[in-house]
Length: 164
Image: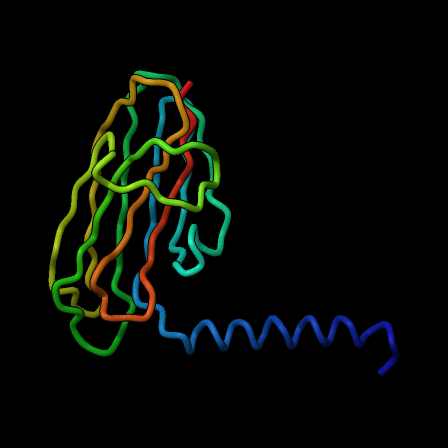
């Protein structure tokens, strides 16, 4: 093998090890979050904490103040080993200080919020779809997350929302 192929081989091995490690880590929830405005839409998928704010950068969507928005989230239990009891799925839209904020404001400060607690069977799906309007310009975070999954980490999906 010549020296040109060695770095590529190392990168391939690193990617292979990373995919094996993440599969072995035992992901338990897939989350598909969408925010749909009158002119544009944005979608985000499951991320995890720690680290604070997650691993992936949040997508951004710009909308006009007072514009009708549709928030839709679907959570799917991909954990194949039995029922996860008393899992909470919660959603909220909360004002933040900046794009990509890693410190998540408390849901109590939310423009809108809701939750559902359920026994999450393998392959079970739960979702929410609602219309909202945000009248005050600013930067907001749309977030859907899990609580009480009996795991070493929780999952979330989030989109930064700029309201002009």
